[in-house]
Image 1 (cartoon, rainbow, N blue to C red):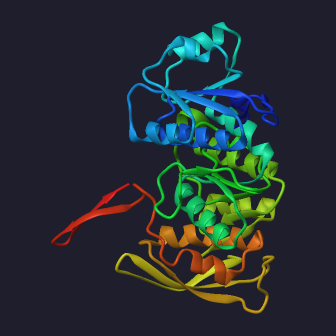
Image 2 (cartoon, rainbow, N blue to C red):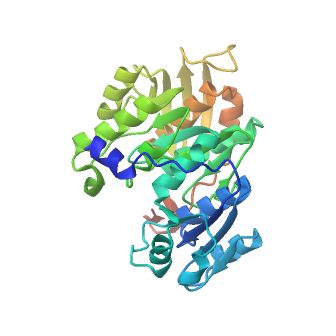
Image 3 (cartoon, rainbow, N blue to C red):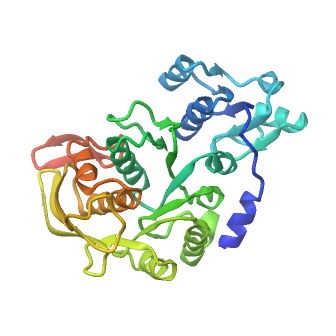
Length: 343
């Protein structure tokens, strides 16, 4: 099934080395608005459209991006490329107009495939934890003054926007739901876990696993994989990846974990991973997020940050006041003994 998924993406790569006129249908969505920001900061002329006005559209206009409400067929007339949210039907009048005029229409995955060759890309993949891990790694790289770019499918209080085109590194979620993880050109990759999901795209757990296997094989650089997840651990062994988790077999391991009051305190121990600081092999961490799943998300980001040259102390300090990601196990209220979570 991974081969079929890759074939659906195709080999099409649109060069974005020179300024292009790009129109985004459904630009108000979290994924498409982030792509609009990236393309505009790369120097392309970006326009977009959506069905209804929103705060997101106003924010895009403030960046100089032309946004039309509602959809109109003529807005694509002078465009070089058109892309859209996966939620937009192919019957949309703008997509139909672009096809009739011979304008290249790209899926979201194909557009990411066109963007990522222009930066040193770090792909964060896995069934669960992509958004939080991408955010944590971005904060660590920013703390190390590396001026990374990022593309995150949610709002983060500590970041100025959901997306940014940086000076060198580009960190993004590599989504398996539309096989974006197979379209992206990456020089480093994280695999958080493998679970049964998106069967419409991959057919089976074996198909999903095969797609992650193909992604790791295509990545030209450090691979960071969770050894606590059996399916991911099997791929880690076959790709000689740096591993993380709570297992004694992990290269980077969390020990002495204490979960309380919506936070986690633990010690990270490591060995055998290239790092900026060789004077120690452990560090105490306070993570202001609840749950073991977030301990593992931290370990994923921490391990990749080390592989990219960030000192462990810098990486740990970068998240000491992390407020979390919007709608990612976000606590909305408490009443008596009940906690209400938005996820």
